[in-house]
Image (cartoon, rainbow, N blue to C red; front, top):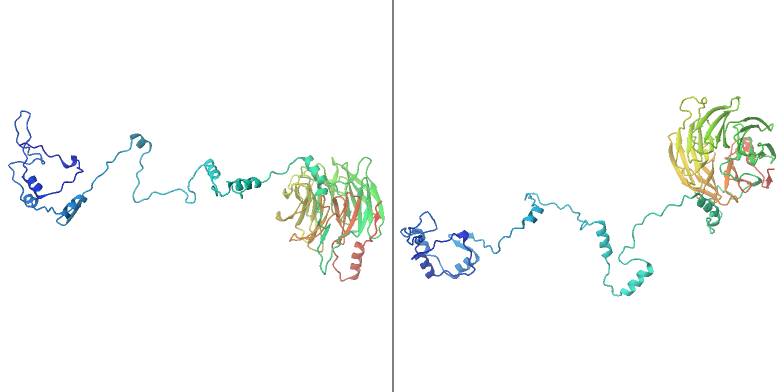
Length: 560
């Protein structure tokens, strides 16, 4: 009887049927003998000894196999072990891994598109995503997800929720609290700004607030009413002009249209000093340091020099191309600011009066002030610039740094007319801006640093420092027309006198005693305010002199 050769175990498929191992079956398997396979000629060939899977008939059975083949137990526990794939034999366990599902390789196209990245088992895969952000979607996807979100999609009363959302104007699926863009800036139209400035007095003043607020204590009380009022008919209502000056001899100079007047504070006497040429007007006045001479600026560009005692004009210094809006003295040097942005130094002692020229402004120079020691000169212009110049005066046209500003400040956003040096700390300079700025800056002219800034409710027209207190006074235009006193360096408001004039307060000057401030406005009035007190002096003579300089009667007088 011929038998087919055995198939190797690696090519043999596993049978799903489980046949129990019985003693009869074991004996039959041991009795089976293997013979050679038939040849093509129909004969039988001897067994192939080179094939290990074919057994030779003449070969005897191994004694070990005979001994162990018939001794295989067939009880129920062994069957259970065989079914589970574990066979315990001689104390050694060997597990048979049973494959129940074949491995299916991925398609070639997918494998080529995404090559497998081999990673070392010692380095775990790092997750680069943010643990606080679940997914990194695009902006549109995030917006879509936010729109699709709903806090309570299954509301018990959808009709009420819809009516509430319609009444409040708030979408259901959008946050109530969110950041918004800044409001658009105000229009830069000059005509609109002018109209707004004209109607601001009608709507800008809070009607419930009192017209003045003052700080009073047991030792100090500031009056909110003027001590004296002078009529000044014909005074020019122009922000850029400087029409008031108070000398050390207690004389007040006022420019009314084309005429200049001097008022004596001790006696109330009024003297007309001179008149401007026909067809022009007086644009600036300023007393010399000793009070004996008065500089007068003309709208046509000339600068006149007058003797106050003899009431005669000493000379006329021409050369400017437009009006002279500001003047300032430093001993025998009279500096003038012109509408073309230039500043000239006039030496009143010599025939060729022009001894210096400063070019640092692109607009009209409307504020000019020498420091008391004559080392620095400060100027402000319509180009929103503050310049601090070296006080040394050189030759005209000479090369050097004297014609270049020591400090140039561009922090203001409007014309700078208000310029004032501090009398008790010479390095401090105060400057104030116009309507679009309304800010006071305090500068350290030694280092060039800005020390303090103060925002006010309206344009700043002039600044006066107190010689006896660490305070300064500011005058303002629309809409408050106020006088304000601020402490330094805290910059706190000490007193505010609202509606000090019926029109914007354009000019101010301080008395030689430092206690009374005279203000002028477009309402053709000059008002005297006692805002500070003169400290008591031990010597009675000096005290009487100081009190007599600042004392004025309370009746109303007229300049003309």
